Image 1 (cartoon, one colour):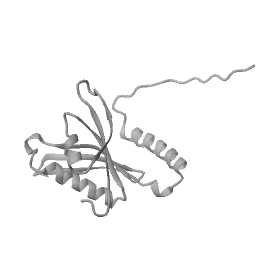
Image 2 (cartoon, one colour):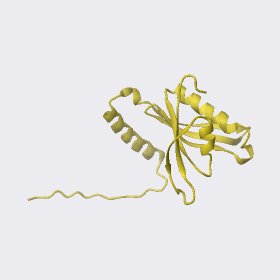
Image 3 (cartoon, helix red, strand yellow):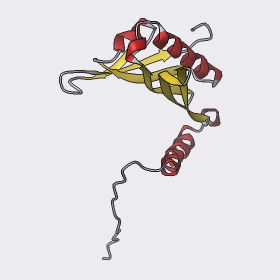
Length: 151
């Protein structure tokens, strides 16, 4: 009896190139769309929304739209600008852009030492949690369904 042998190598790459990242995301996305069987879910986009005072970056977000959902990968506000509703205005801009792109929800995560209460105050629901990650904290997964009437 003959056995099949596969030879392969595993390689770790630090800071993979943008083209490699795009290729890998495309491969996963194409596979996922083939399994979902709904071409209306094929739209995807990676973008940032920046807030500047002159040339100084004071707030920003990174977002990835796929399957009609917007993954809010990060939302950051400069420490000296916190407490001035800048985060709320940025999040509202993100939600407006998500709806413009056809998304029906926004989802992401926040650590306990960051701002999970900020999101729940603005209508996000806690949908999961990793306890004690990082050690002594929790990681909260949050989601908000978008409606025509939501800000």
